[in-house]
Image (cartoon, rainbow, N blue to C red; front, side, top):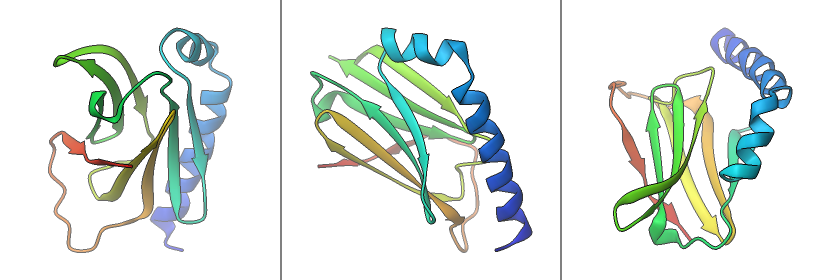
Amino acid sequence: MHKNQKEEQSELRQWLELLCNDPYASILDETIFHVDVLETAEDYIVEAELSHCQKENIVVLCENHSLTIQIQKNGVTEKQRNILLPFSLLDKNISAHFSPPILEVRISKVALQNHSPQNHITVIDISE
């Protein structure tokens, strides 16, 4: 494992501890929608519980250190959660899968090869 990956994992573990101890996270879980952050050997996983929601109304956006999940109706954002991450998303492979009521966003731990990071917002396609 590269030193950069070890530092990134250490930062993520510290961030997860802060997230678990954040009193506002539970309020957002109850008032907007519930979000969990998990880790596997290959990926970081963000799961959102989107009850009574259709795939067509979900938008997933990535911007540098931020993952945003929106529920939209008629082009208007009704609910939104912004998950700040302790590492850049610009050079990561990110995929999203929706199997009602769970949206799963997978973020690869390994940086993409020959990828020139750009500072812009990326919309992630959601599969079923």
